[in-house]
Length: 357
Image (cartoon, rainbow, N blue to C red; front, top):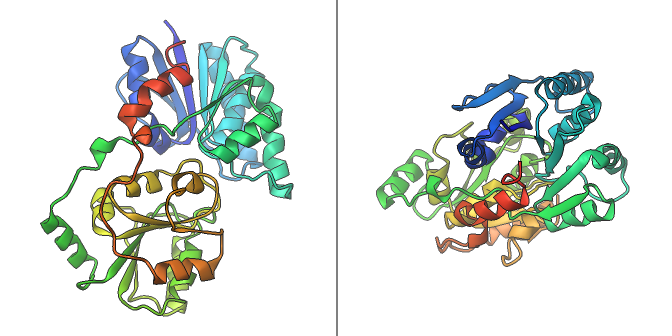
């Protein structure tokens, strides 16, 4: 029986992106193993819990690499799918150390955490990618800039372009006007108030601090800024809001199970990210009819080509200007159908070689 190993930094990655593909493999007689931080339970899947640390040079990640190498050596996988930057490098290094040449490595890049700008950070991350490129039989990227980097440095023997993993539109049904009115009331939004929304982990990369600073520069008072998510920078951002006297304008919801309702209720999604692959929060917001204001970085730029809501990364004045002049939302789905799961799935099965294991 054929066997596949899927590796990610966090088990939520499998839940968010890979369930349809895991089920495809299982239905076609492939045994699926997963490995990541945290638990992952799915019928027919064998899961291994890892101990990744976010800092790519952490000694703990060395232990993870040897643990994965041992697993690959024991199970003799036919294919190893690695995801994103940390797990992508660690998983391919583990395959290299395992000595199991038959385990073909297929890396799905959900966004390189660097630009090709010659900075120290870029050199470190690029060096890691170069270290495992000979072990990368297939490399999949999701935005134009990452495609250019991958091709320039030959980071995989075969390089393909995906329109993301596919947005499962069934998770984002229409909601009633009464539910929207109730949600606005829960958020304390008065009639006519603009509701801005930011969805994502509080981190340096997601850069919520820039949004908070932009709010402090607004002259308009008819708005609320809603944050949904947890993360290491949450308390720091709450303190920033208090220091700027924005407690009555900023709402911190924490992790929310009502994201679809938030997209349908709020008027405009804001992303201040430093790096993205193909950001699901922007895909989701566009599908739900929200306007977007996003930093002009890879991933964001690919999705915002036909909108006016783009600003140079960390240009706080421009971000504040876009928020100040945000127009009424038309509430029409603006996500091209190529990004919908029902349209991307079959193409991804072919491009990612799930049908050739």
